[in-house]
Length: 484
Ligand SMILES: [Zn+2]
Image (cartoon, rainbow, N blue to C red; front, side, top):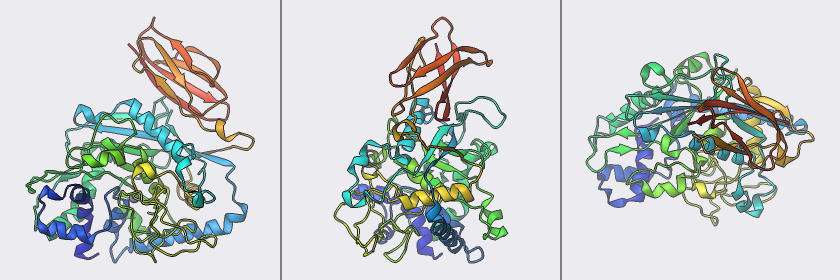
């Protein structure tokens, strides 16, 4: 990796500031580098891959081989492939906070889970905005996410951990200023990712992973980099990062050893979680709030975690994402939503399709992202079968109608004065509900129809309760309710 690429890693983080507010007065050296770039800082996953790449481990090449291998397997399996099975992935959200604002409420996390499920199951309202030429290519991935209901010790949980930390900026402190480009690039290589992954370590101010083979771990915290040497702004916001799958038989042991330093999962800046997050990106990032407050940054990152590459292949037209039904493009969409761009010639079913700004794996504005292609769904499902085999449970959806296979539970108000309500989004069916107190005694329960909201009243006995929901299609979810 040459110096310019190394610098670009950092510049990626700076770029949103520059493009948003040209008069922030950054030094010309930074501005010049910014102009060389066509990328934007939605996530750092590819930059992480580049960071890991050395001539000795040849990570990028191996990563491409991984994708080629998955692609080959998909081609082999295509005639037998079935989307009848639904993959269900248990998720634990680790909230790591220094200030109270960073201790984001359960309601934001539940909202994020709902957005994640809507996008992966194509239950998102804006699916209606997908352009006609893509409708044959896009679809339901049949991958769904539930809050973990049992923790690694076997105890009931709502799938959220909360950890108070002394660390104010998980990106760390950049000890160099404008002009010190070589030092900055060395710092990025040597320190930045280590700093960010402190989120995943209790001994370093974060919270330890739950078994990464059995849970999707998502850490939420303050990913800013503090930058005291720059005069005009002191913080860089790092939006999110995911680790792509690693455990592939063709991969050399040295590489696996090197990557074992980092936990598998997703890191996301606390402001970018959910579409109802009360926090906002500060100036000079404020203009990005509209584009990022959609909950779709996590959708993009989970795409990486399940093996997907950026739709433009992180390069010019010849670079591919190894997925045959995603059109090529020569660069990311850089937060735009341009429906008139067709930057590369390709042949997908005989058509030269435009840039697919609708795709979650572009860097387009979250408000115009609404689709995964079936090819992307294939790759993610194959990664779950081959590379993350213990992560998901599968259940058959044969005979289950589309509208009833998807559950998104809302519980409100929470905390509650006593009476609270459950609503089930798009799910119509029967749910078996059991409400337990903290010592595991069942307080209330029964079978209910989900077509209307269900209410319970626990005002006679304030406390913390777990509401265990078992749906007739096999889905299970546990939510916590606090009665005050
Ligand atoms: Zn990305």
